[in-house]
Length: 174
Image 1 (cartoon, rainbow, N blue to C red):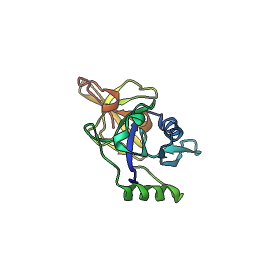
Image 2: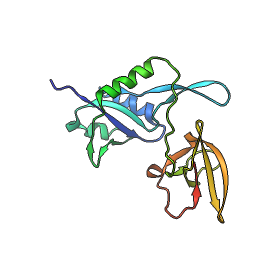
Image 3: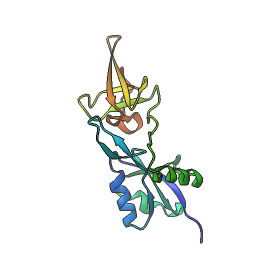
């Protein structure tokens, strides 16, 4: 019997848990890493460690049932070829999550990345990441060759590849 490989699956925004449940319901092994996130009110809540992604183990030659599941965008890979996740790295990640230690995910955006603000009072604005400040992104919106910086929750922002950010915008987000 062949050992099934783990693959990273890109899912629709905020659909990680529902999609994971759907995969489990169809008999797939799923790993959705979560951690305790401290909110501004001092409370903590469970949050997905890699928003927009989950891991599942399946036979890559029989991936159509996975791709047809509501919420699944694609299987991470090169072009249309899915690339398995290194089993040692995944097992290490499982140990980190199971240890119950304080986990801080790295910032999901890189400086220079084009983004769209998806939530909050600036929803619909576009920009470019210019820097990180703790668990937040500093957003600078250029207008008439001037800038205004705003601190936004990184959860409010989606990468350009997901949000289809237009090329003509001059807004800058970080």
